[in-house]
Image (cartoon, rainbow, N blue to C red):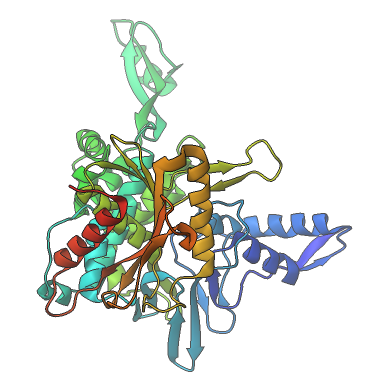
Length: 478
């Protein structure tokens, strides 16, 4: 009989955002004896992997000899926008150890990782001032900031990310009912609901003259521990909640049902083991509860307090996602005459076996004329040379452009890429041309940047310069 002799549950010391890569690696390295086919082998390894305890967030167990454990195949789906797309494996992070020293490499991801009692901060190429501005925009905080604000604890900056992700995940489940569970209540009356309470019936009812009967009956109530945790976590958030639809109504609803007591540390840390979350109706609450755990335990977490000297914990976020959200909010604020859509779904060849879905970062539509512009935000270094703009990025955006031109004709007026930059575009460089470089076309193509401010500049001034260049490109005279 076939069985898994050795299950390989690690991929070196890497957490990689490709489900297929992680899956194939584990299946390929695991030792299976007696399997009659490749399908049988894969099924056995998959079943063995399902028995591995799933950890929360990016918390992994770090073994100095064997590296990071691969905890669950399903976790890798969270790092892919479209699970049907075949992509190269994207590194989330890799931890290398040389004696007592640790080094970390982290693709496009940024955040904080605790290795035992040591805290590792993964930064981007942006200045602290610019990166704080990006995070603030993602969290709905649009007030100006200056260089004096960057001296605060960096963990506070990254905690804003966790708060934002918590509120977004909570908003996604806002339309569903709060988790409920059955509790047994006691009553005494002439009519019976539920079952007779034998003990109380013998003790009290038999000697009573009113002939009432004691009984117990089940009734569904909101899971108080979940309500208390979600409400206390929401109160800890510094993110501007008014900019997130439905969050204020969720907060008010939770406040009405709050017990008035802050949940204990044990309640917080054990909430994900609650049997009620095994109900498929309430499974979506696991994600906001995971973030709530981190928010309520944030002080201990940021201090790097762990029980094991070789444990790894932390929170990481895709910096390219933050950049997209920053650009999206920036355009929503300043382009009053345009509808700004993010991640609009394009369905190519829908009736065929090779149907594909594509998602341009931004599609701008003029409210009156119906003119269309498609833009992509790229979180890459921009030094204004030929190597900055990838050929693949140009092909992708030109593919979107051709689609919108076929759909809407001359209402499609242009496409562009948006990057962060350390310098303003040199005067001898041209960043806008007719589409494909073919003269006198209606459509144009451009590359735009938001400059990381230097000492004699302000963030708002650089943002206004970017918006001015973009308005000139799309023909917005406002």
